[in-house]
Image (cartoon, rainbow, N blue to C red; front, top):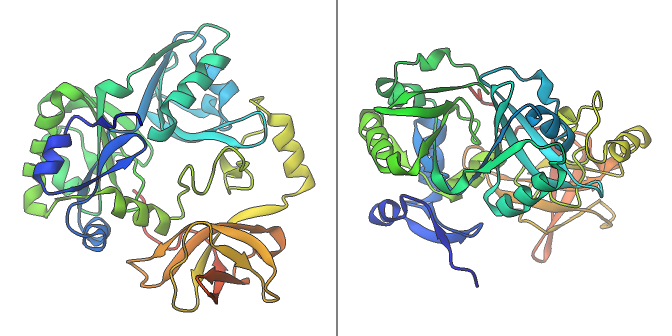
Length: 366
Protein backbone atom coordinates (compact mmCIF):
# COMPACT_ATOMS: atom_id res chain seq x y z
CA UNK A 1 0.00 0.00 0.00
CA UNK A 2 1.51 3.31 -1.12
CA UNK A 3 1.73 5.93 1.59
CA UNK A 4 -0.92 8.62 1.29
CA UNK A 5 0.23 11.97 -0.03
CA UNK A 6 -0.61 15.02 2.04
CA UNK A 7 -1.71 18.43 0.81
CA UNK A 8 0.30 21.40 2.12
CA UNK A 9 -2.43 22.27 4.66
CA UNK A 10 -2.98 18.74 6.00
CA UNK A 11 -2.30 19.87 9.59
CA UNK A 12 -4.64 22.87 9.22
CA UNK A 13 -7.54 20.58 8.30
CA UNK A 14 -6.76 18.23 11.15
CA UNK A 15 -6.70 21.19 13.57
CA UNK A 16 -10.08 22.33 12.22
CA UNK A 17 -11.49 18.94 13.24
CA UNK A 18 -11.91 17.58 9.71
CA UNK A 19 -12.56 13.89 9.23
CA UNK A 20 -9.65 12.88 6.99
CA UNK A 21 -10.01 10.00 4.51
CA UNK A 22 -7.92 8.46 1.72
CA UNK A 23 -9.02 9.89 -1.63
CA UNK A 24 -7.18 9.50 -4.96
CA UNK A 25 -3.96 8.68 -3.10
CA UNK A 26 -4.21 11.73 -0.80
CA UNK A 27 -5.23 12.24 2.82
CA UNK A 28 -8.19 14.58 2.31
CA UNK A 29 -10.86 16.31 4.44
CA UNK A 30 -14.22 14.67 3.70
CA UNK A 31 -16.15 16.86 6.16
CA UNK A 32 -15.65 19.31 9.02
CA UNK A 33 -19.20 19.37 10.47
CA UNK A 34 -21.82 17.56 8.37
CA UNK A 35 -22.20 17.04 4.63
CA UNK A 36 -25.69 18.56 4.77
CA UNK A 37 -24.61 21.71 6.62
CA UNK A 38 -21.60 22.19 4.35
CA UNK A 39 -23.69 21.67 1.21
CA UNK A 40 -26.19 24.36 2.27
CA UNK A 41 -23.33 26.71 3.22
CA UNK A 42 -22.05 26.65 -0.37
CA UNK A 43 -25.48 26.81 -2.06
CA UNK A 44 -26.69 29.68 0.12
CA UNK A 45 -23.57 31.52 1.31
CA UNK A 46 -19.85 30.76 0.78
CA UNK A 47 -17.42 27.94 1.53
CA UNK A 48 -13.77 27.13 0.86
CA UNK A 49 -12.50 23.75 -0.35
CA UNK A 50 -8.89 22.65 -0.34
CA UNK A 51 -8.64 20.72 -3.60
CA UNK A 52 -4.84 20.76 -3.82
CA UNK A 53 -4.85 17.09 -4.78
CA UNK A 54 -5.77 18.07 -8.36
CA UNK A 55 -3.01 17.80 -10.99
CA UNK A 56 -1.52 20.67 -12.99
CA UNK A 57 0.66 20.34 -16.09
CA UNK A 58 2.29 23.24 -17.96
CA UNK A 59 2.48 22.86 -21.75
CA UNK A 60 4.78 25.38 -23.43
CA UNK A 61 6.48 26.19 -26.70
CA UNK A 62 5.64 26.46 -30.41
CA UNK A 63 4.20 22.90 -30.38
CA UNK A 64 2.02 23.38 -27.27
CA UNK A 65 -1.28 24.00 -29.09
CA UNK A 66 -0.60 21.24 -31.62
CA UNK A 67 -0.20 18.69 -28.81
CA UNK A 68 -3.32 19.86 -26.96
CA UNK A 69 -5.34 19.74 -30.19
CA UNK A 70 -4.25 16.17 -30.91
CA UNK A 71 -4.96 14.76 -27.42
CA UNK A 72 -8.19 16.60 -26.46
CA UNK A 73 -11.69 16.53 -27.96
CA UNK A 74 -12.53 20.23 -27.62
CA UNK A 75 -11.12 22.85 -30.00
CA UNK A 76 -8.38 24.62 -28.04
CA UNK A 77 -7.71 26.88 -31.04
CA UNK A 78 -10.87 28.74 -29.97
CA UNK A 79 -9.20 29.76 -26.70
CA UNK A 80 -7.81 33.27 -26.19
CA UNK A 81 -5.46 34.52 -23.45
CA UNK A 82 -7.17 34.33 -20.06
CA UNK A 83 -9.82 31.82 -21.15
CA UNK A 84 -10.50 28.34 -19.74
CA UNK A 85 -11.98 25.39 -21.63
CA UNK A 86 -13.50 22.13 -20.42
CA UNK A 87 -12.30 19.13 -22.43
CA UNK A 88 -11.33 15.47 -22.23
CA UNK A 89 -8.58 13.10 -23.37
CA UNK A 90 -10.14 10.38 -25.55
CA UNK A 91 -8.41 6.99 -25.63
CA UNK A 92 -7.85 4.61 -28.54
CA UNK A 93 -10.78 2.36 -27.58
CA UNK A 94 -13.56 4.95 -27.65
CA UNK A 95 -13.41 5.76 -23.92
CA UNK A 96 -12.05 8.64 -21.86
CA UNK A 97 -8.60 8.82 -20.27
CA UNK A 98 -9.68 11.82 -18.16
CA UNK A 99 -11.64 15.06 -18.25
CA UNK A 100 -9.73 18.28 -17.70
CA UNK A 101 -9.55 22.07 -17.88
CA UNK A 102 -7.30 23.85 -20.39
CA UNK A 103 -6.02 27.32 -19.44
CA UNK A 104 -4.44 29.56 -22.10
CA UNK A 105 -1.87 32.04 -20.75
CA UNK A 106 -0.72 32.93 -24.24
CA UNK A 107 -0.28 31.26 -27.64
CA UNK A 108 2.68 29.18 -26.43
CA UNK A 109 1.77 28.54 -22.80
CA UNK A 110 -1.10 26.48 -21.38
CA UNK A 111 -1.99 24.76 -18.11
CA UNK A 112 -3.92 21.49 -18.01
CA UNK A 113 -5.78 20.72 -14.77
CA UNK A 114 -6.51 17.00 -14.33
CA UNK A 115 -8.08 14.71 -11.77
CA UNK A 116 -5.99 13.66 -8.79
CA UNK A 117 -6.55 9.95 -9.35
CA UNK A 118 -5.25 10.24 -12.91
CA UNK A 119 -2.15 12.45 -12.52
CA UNK A 120 0.41 9.76 -13.43
CA UNK A 121 -1.82 8.17 -16.06
CA UNK A 122 -2.46 11.54 -17.74
CA UNK A 123 1.20 12.55 -17.54
CA UNK A 124 2.24 9.31 -19.25
CA UNK A 125 -0.51 9.77 -21.86
CA UNK A 126 0.59 13.32 -22.70
CA UNK A 127 4.23 12.30 -22.99
CA UNK A 128 3.34 9.38 -25.23
CA UNK A 129 1.74 11.78 -27.74
CA UNK A 130 4.31 14.55 -27.37
CA UNK A 131 6.12 13.60 -30.57
CA UNK A 132 6.77 17.17 -31.77
CA UNK A 133 8.66 18.46 -28.77
CA UNK A 134 6.30 20.59 -26.67
CA UNK A 135 7.77 21.43 -23.25
CA UNK A 136 5.88 19.58 -20.50
CA UNK A 137 6.26 20.35 -16.79
CA UNK A 138 4.31 18.57 -14.05
CA UNK A 139 3.78 21.19 -11.31
CA UNK A 140 1.15 19.19 -9.38
CA UNK A 141 3.24 18.72 -6.23
CA UNK A 142 4.18 22.39 -5.91
CA UNK A 143 0.75 24.01 -6.30
CA UNK A 144 -2.13 24.34 -3.83
CA UNK A 145 -5.66 24.91 -5.10
CA UNK A 146 -8.49 26.48 -3.11
CA UNK A 147 -12.06 26.68 -4.41
CA UNK A 148 -14.11 29.48 -2.85
CA UNK A 149 -17.67 28.78 -3.91
CA UNK A 150 -21.11 30.21 -3.25
CA UNK A 151 -23.21 33.33 -3.90
CA UNK A 152 -21.11 35.34 -1.41
CA UNK A 153 -17.74 34.33 -2.91
CA UNK A 154 -17.17 37.75 -4.50
CA UNK A 155 -17.96 39.57 -1.26
CA UNK A 156 -15.67 37.25 0.72
CA UNK A 157 -12.68 37.66 -1.63
CA UNK A 158 -12.90 41.20 -3.04
CA UNK A 159 -10.79 42.82 -0.29
CA UNK A 160 -7.86 40.51 -1.16
CA UNK A 161 -7.35 41.68 -4.75
CA UNK A 162 -7.50 44.77 -6.94
CA UNK A 163 -9.25 42.80 -9.70
CA UNK A 164 -12.96 43.58 -10.02
CA UNK A 165 -14.26 40.08 -9.25
CA UNK A 166 -17.83 40.83 -10.29
CA UNK A 167 -16.47 41.73 -13.74
CA UNK A 168 -14.84 38.32 -14.26
CA UNK A 169 -16.77 36.17 -16.71
CA UNK A 170 -17.34 32.45 -16.07
CA UNK A 171 -14.45 30.33 -17.39
CA UNK A 172 -11.93 33.18 -17.50
CA UNK A 173 -8.84 33.68 -15.31
CA UNK A 174 -6.13 36.20 -14.50
CA UNK A 175 -2.66 36.06 -12.94
CA UNK A 176 -2.60 38.64 -10.17
CA UNK A 177 -1.38 39.63 -6.73
CA UNK A 178 -3.83 38.06 -4.32
CA UNK A 179 -3.76 38.23 -0.52
CA UNK A 180 -0.37 39.94 -0.85
CA UNK A 181 1.09 37.04 -2.85
CA UNK A 182 2.27 37.70 -6.44
CA UNK A 183 1.49 35.55 -9.48
CA UNK A 184 -1.60 33.82 -8.11
CA UNK A 185 -3.91 32.28 -10.74
CA UNK A 186 -7.44 33.49 -10.01
CA UNK A 187 -10.01 31.56 -12.03
CA UNK A 188 -13.78 32.08 -12.30
CA UNK A 189 -14.44 28.35 -12.35
CA UNK A 190 -15.78 25.69 -9.98
CA UNK A 191 -17.43 22.31 -9.59
CA UNK A 192 -20.50 23.36 -7.58
CA UNK A 193 -22.73 25.49 -9.83
CA UNK A 194 -22.93 28.00 -6.97
CA UNK A 195 -20.55 30.52 -8.54
CA UNK A 196 -17.14 31.46 -7.22
CA UNK A 197 -13.44 31.11 -7.89
CA UNK A 198 -10.55 28.66 -7.92
CA UNK A 199 -7.22 29.98 -6.67
CA UNK A 200 -3.88 28.40 -7.61
CA UNK A 201 -1.03 29.35 -5.27
CA UNK A 202 2.51 28.03 -4.67
CA UNK A 203 2.65 25.66 -1.68
CA UNK A 204 5.05 28.03 0.09
CA UNK A 205 2.23 30.61 0.31
CA UNK A 206 -0.68 28.20 0.83
CA UNK A 207 -1.09 28.74 4.58
CA UNK A 208 -0.86 32.52 4.27
CA UNK A 209 -3.46 32.65 1.50
CA UNK A 210 -5.82 30.22 3.27
CA UNK A 211 -5.65 32.25 6.49
CA UNK A 212 -6.28 35.52 4.67
CA UNK A 213 -9.26 34.07 2.79
CA UNK A 214 -10.72 32.78 6.05
CA UNK A 215 -10.20 36.16 7.75
CA UNK A 216 -11.63 38.17 4.84
CA UNK A 217 -14.57 35.79 4.51
CA UNK A 218 -15.44 35.60 8.21
CA UNK A 219 -17.88 38.57 8.09
CA UNK A 220 -19.65 36.74 5.26
CA UNK A 221 -19.84 33.42 7.10
CA UNK A 222 -17.21 31.49 5.13
CA UNK A 223 -16.64 27.91 6.30
CA UNK A 224 -14.28 25.11 5.24
CA UNK A 225 -16.04 22.47 3.15
CA UNK A 226 -15.08 18.83 2.60
CA UNK A 227 -15.24 16.38 -0.29
CA UNK A 228 -18.59 14.99 0.87
CA UNK A 229 -20.44 18.21 0.07
CA UNK A 230 -18.35 18.68 -3.07
CA UNK A 231 -19.84 15.45 -4.39
CA UNK A 232 -23.49 16.32 -3.64
CA UNK A 233 -23.02 19.84 -5.04
CA UNK A 234 -21.53 18.59 -8.34
CA UNK A 235 -24.18 15.89 -8.66
CA UNK A 236 -27.02 18.42 -8.28
CA UNK A 237 -25.50 20.19 -11.31
CA UNK A 238 -25.15 16.97 -13.30
CA UNK A 239 -21.36 17.37 -13.52
CA UNK A 240 -19.58 14.12 -14.36
CA UNK A 241 -17.16 12.58 -11.86
CA UNK A 242 -14.33 10.65 -13.48
CA UNK A 243 -14.31 7.03 -12.32
CA UNK A 244 -18.08 7.11 -11.73
CA UNK A 245 -19.95 8.70 -14.64
CA UNK A 246 -17.15 8.63 -17.22
CA UNK A 247 -14.15 6.32 -17.48
CA UNK A 248 -11.91 4.40 -19.87
CA UNK A 249 -14.89 2.53 -21.34
CA UNK A 250 -17.46 5.36 -21.70
CA UNK A 251 -17.31 7.49 -24.82
CA UNK A 252 -17.63 11.28 -24.58
CA UNK A 253 -20.75 11.06 -26.73
CA UNK A 254 -22.40 8.48 -24.46
CA UNK A 255 -21.42 10.57 -21.43
CA UNK A 256 -23.24 13.67 -22.65
CA UNK A 257 -19.99 15.37 -23.66
CA UNK A 258 -20.80 15.75 -27.34
CA UNK A 259 -20.65 19.52 -26.77
CA UNK A 260 -16.90 19.28 -26.09
CA UNK A 261 -16.26 16.80 -28.93
CA UNK A 262 -15.39 18.88 -31.99
CA UNK A 263 -15.01 17.01 -35.27
CA UNK A 264 -13.78 20.18 -36.99
CA UNK A 265 -10.25 18.96 -36.14
CA UNK A 266 -8.44 15.64 -35.87
CA UNK A 267 -7.74 14.14 -32.46
CA UNK A 268 -7.10 10.74 -30.87
CA UNK A 269 -9.65 8.22 -32.17
CA UNK A 270 -11.78 10.89 -33.85
CA UNK A 271 -12.83 8.54 -36.71
CA UNK A 272 -14.31 6.03 -34.24
CA UNK A 273 -16.25 8.72 -32.36
CA UNK A 274 -17.42 10.31 -35.62
CA UNK A 275 -18.75 6.93 -36.74
CA UNK A 276 -20.40 6.39 -33.36
CA UNK A 277 -22.18 9.72 -33.73
CA UNK A 278 -23.34 8.90 -37.26
CA UNK A 279 -24.57 5.40 -36.38
CA UNK A 280 -26.31 6.54 -33.20
CA UNK A 281 -25.65 5.65 -29.59
CA UNK A 282 -26.71 2.40 -27.94
CA UNK A 283 -26.70 3.98 -24.48
CA UNK A 284 -26.63 7.42 -22.90
CA UNK A 285 -25.84 8.96 -19.54
CA UNK A 286 -29.01 10.47 -18.06
CA UNK A 287 -30.07 12.23 -14.91
CA UNK A 288 -33.05 10.90 -12.97
CA UNK A 289 -35.13 11.86 -9.96
CA UNK A 290 -36.68 9.32 -7.64
CA UNK A 291 -40.48 9.35 -7.61
CA UNK A 292 -40.58 7.14 -4.55
CA UNK A 293 -38.62 7.33 -1.30
CA UNK A 294 -35.16 5.89 -1.80
CA UNK A 295 -31.55 6.86 -2.33
CA UNK A 296 -29.89 5.54 -5.50
CA UNK A 297 -26.23 4.55 -5.30
CA UNK A 298 -23.53 3.67 -7.83
CA UNK A 299 -23.89 0.22 -9.44
CA UNK A 300 -27.58 -0.16 -8.59
CA UNK A 301 -29.50 -1.71 -11.49
CA UNK A 302 -31.85 0.38 -13.64
CA UNK A 303 -34.78 -1.59 -15.05
CA UNK A 304 -37.90 -0.95 -17.13
CA UNK A 305 -41.50 -1.61 -16.16
CA UNK A 306 -41.10 -5.27 -17.22
CA UNK A 307 -38.16 -5.59 -14.78
CA UNK A 308 -35.65 -5.96 -17.63
CA UNK A 309 -32.24 -4.44 -16.97
CA UNK A 310 -31.72 -1.32 -19.09
CA UNK A 311 -28.71 0.21 -17.34
CA UNK A 312 -26.84 1.03 -14.16
CA UNK A 313 -26.56 3.95 -11.74
CA UNK A 314 -23.16 5.69 -11.82
CA UNK A 315 -23.74 8.37 -9.14
CA UNK A 316 -26.57 8.92 -6.70
CA UNK A 317 -27.49 10.72 -3.50
CA UNK A 318 -30.24 12.37 -1.51
CA UNK A 319 -30.26 15.92 -2.93
CA UNK A 320 -29.97 18.36 0.01
CA UNK A 321 -31.51 21.15 -2.09
CA UNK A 322 -34.42 19.16 -3.55
CA UNK A 323 -35.00 16.81 -0.63
CA UNK A 324 -35.32 13.73 -2.84
CA UNK A 325 -33.12 11.04 -4.35
CA UNK A 326 -31.31 11.98 -7.55
CA UNK A 327 -28.83 10.12 -9.70
CA UNK A 328 -27.06 9.66 -12.99
CA UNK A 329 -26.63 6.47 -14.93
CA UNK A 330 -26.34 4.87 -18.34
CA UNK A 331 -29.52 3.56 -19.94
CA UNK A 332 -30.30 2.16 -23.37
CA UNK A 333 -31.10 5.07 -25.69
CA UNK A 334 -34.82 4.29 -25.97
CA UNK A 335 -35.15 5.07 -22.24
CA UNK A 336 -33.09 8.28 -22.29
CA UNK A 337 -35.73 10.93 -23.02
CA UNK A 338 -36.82 13.40 -20.31
CA UNK A 339 -39.96 12.31 -18.38
CA UNK A 340 -39.26 8.65 -19.29
CA UNK A 341 -40.32 6.35 -16.45
CA UNK A 342 -37.55 4.04 -15.22
CA UNK A 343 -37.04 1.97 -12.07
CA UNK A 344 -34.11 1.67 -9.69
CA UNK A 345 -33.37 -1.53 -7.78
CA UNK A 346 -32.63 -0.35 -4.23
CA UNK A 347 -31.85 -3.27 -1.95
CA UNK A 348 -34.85 -5.59 -2.31
CA UNK A 349 -37.23 -2.99 -3.78
CA UNK A 350 -37.87 -1.70 -7.30
CA UNK A 351 -38.61 2.03 -7.03
CA UNK A 352 -39.99 4.38 -9.64
CA UNK A 353 -37.88 7.23 -11.04
CA UNK A 354 -38.06 9.54 -14.05
CA UNK A 355 -35.43 10.82 -16.45
CA UNK A 356 -34.93 14.58 -16.15
CA UNK A 357 -33.00 17.22 -18.04
CA UNK A 358 -29.80 18.27 -16.27
CA UNK A 359 -28.95 20.13 -14.13
CA UNK A 360 -31.19 18.98 -11.28
CA UNK A 361 -30.81 22.35 -9.54
CA UNK A 362 -31.26 25.37 -11.78
CA UNK A 363 -28.78 27.87 -10.44
CA UNK A 364 -26.49 30.48 -11.98
CA UNK A 365 -22.97 29.12 -12.35
CA UNK A 366 -21.14 32.44 -12.47
